[in-house]
Each structure stands twice: as C-alpha cells, then as structure tokens.
Length: 423
Image 1 (cartoon, rainbow, N blue to C red):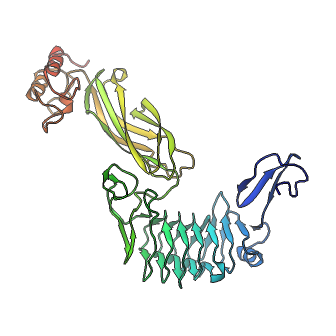
Image 2 (image 1 turned 180 degrees about the vertical axis):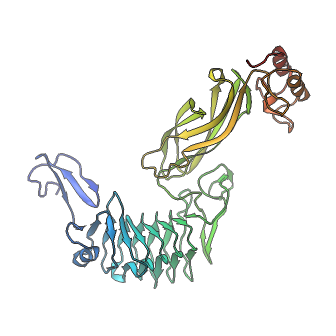
Image 3 (image 1 turned 45 degrees about the vertical axis):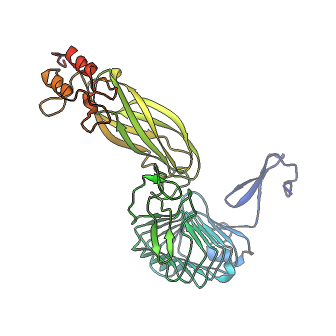
C-alpha cells in the first residue's frame, strides 16, 4: 500500500504531519496522500470545504484571519495548521462552530476563536474531540447542550469570556487539561454531571480563580512535596468537582524553578555555602534538563538531571566561595527549556541574596557585616555557644565554619581573625 502512486519502492517509514501520511520513495521523492482538503488552497472558505467533504475527511486550515460561521453536519477533522494560528473573528455576533448531531465523532484542533456570541456549540453531538484551541473574548467559549455525551474537551485555553464553558443537559463528557483564565464565570454546569479531571497524576484543569497551595502530592494530596497539582479540589458546580486542579496553565512539557534557599546569608570568603533549589516538572512526560546556579551573573554550578512527570525534587549545590569577591550577591537559578516547552517564565528565578565577607565578620552596628572583625563579632557568636540547628535560637550566620552547631571552632575562627579589616 505504501508504494501506491509512487511508481517505485518505499525508502522510508511512513510519517504523519498536518493530517497527512507521507512516505519517501526510491525515486527520490516524498509522497503524501489522504482524504485532505486545504483551505484556502482547495476552497476559499472553511464552510465550502465542509460542504464538499466526505465523512471522515480532514480539513487543513492555513494560518490567517477568517470571518466565518461554520456548521458541521458530518464527522470531520478540522485542523488549524501549525505556524501562525487560524484565527476566527465573529465581529461580536454568531457562533463560530456548530456541531450538529450528524457531526458526532468530529475533531477540532488548532484554531483561535474570538469575539463570537458562542465559540463552539456542541448540539447533541457525541464523541467529539475539542483539543488545543483558544477561545477568548466571546460571550460563551464552549457551549454543550441537548444531551451531548462522550465528548473530550482537552488542552484548550479558554480566557476572558463571559462564560468559559457551559454544560447544559450534557452528561458523561471529559473536560481536563484546559486553562480557564479570567472568565467572568469559569464554568456553568446546570444539571449536567461530567468528569473534570483525568485522575492522578495527570490532573484536571487550571482555574485562575482557584487559590491554593501546592505543597502536597499523591492521590489524596496528603504526602509532602509539590506535584503541580493544587492541594485542594475545585468545586466546578453542583455534583461537579475537579479533584486535581493544576497549579499553573496546562502544558505537555513544562519544568520550572519553585524556590531557592541558601544555607546562610552571611558567609566568610572561602568558607562553605550550599544553595538548595526546588524544581518541578508540571508536564506529562519525564524530562531531562540542566539546572544552573548563579550569584549575580557568575555561573557557579550546573547539574543535568531527569525528573519524572508531575514530580518535584530539591537539588543541593555546594558553592566554592573562594573565587568570589567580597560583596553582596543575588541568587539566580535557571533551568534550560525542554523540547516543546511553551511557558518558560518560571525557568528563571531570582530569589534570595548572600553577603560574602571577610572571615569572622558576621555582624556590625546594624546587624550586618561592617568590614571588620572585632569584639562585637566574637560576642554575638559566643552568645549562641552550644546552640545547634535543632534549637530555635540557632543562627546559621553565626555558625562560621557551618557544621550545624556553634562551638569553640566558631569562636576560635573569629578570634583568630580579630582586628582584621576589609581593605
């Protein structure tokens, strides 16, 4: 079958792109085939392409601006081609896409719908897939009515609408991995009962109005550690609950820096310093990437790591302070972007600061190093003699040699430097 229309043998395995099957031939050509209609190449409007398409056909929509009101009455795949988006603008009225009962089994993906009364109306259509679209600035983003069931509404961005999604008399649908952002009403459920998450660890939807911590993980969200899922469920409406709301807008591939914490904020030049960095994988795939720790613009440590999906970890970096000039530094942590990562805003985090001082200079008149090692420094260290990291009074900045306890080694280190002044 793969030599069909090539006139020669097959040279490569088949590949799929933009809804077509492509195969290389030994005549040095690549052939594509399938039940495909292209807009505007084959027909100038999407509706004309729908009207002539056979059930099961794929309609490929080129990037551009479309002022159309589509009525779909057969199962099709309507696909906005990659690149700049296929943008549908209703000018403030109408319905962008109506899926009639005969359109059951239709897939709509890769389009942007703006400024309509309704974005997509699922009108008693079943088993449709609404995937990876954007609905913004409409009265209703997605409207499902009249016993529509078995539909998958997945990985869409639904923002700035009066109603994000309305489920009216539609039961047994799956709605997850969507990002509901700043809609006047995020979701209206009426008498419908639907699934709003895909279980753990895949999770549910992102709701911009849902404020909760992400400090726990596990199916019951009762184990310590972040997982990209908020710790409290989201009440969508009566009998409709998102058990696993997402901590940030959905992406298949997404890593981020959650926080940094240094072992101390004042460290003597050449003495020990560690910086802990918490990293999260918010996506659905295991990712390999590199973490870097910088003080100001100086890259001091890097580590390549792999983190499984919906997981977090903390990496501790031991910093060599002997190469750093004395002064104030800002801590910067960065994770390299993983393939297909769209949101890299949290791949870079500036969080915290440290002071590199002369050894023994741990305080001054204002409580911070003053460039000299004197009796004030010896006194504040001696005052905490015997304290360790389990004591509330323990101060890591006074643990000069940083062995998690304040003892004669610390007092002796300061005393040995007594009288030194930062030149």
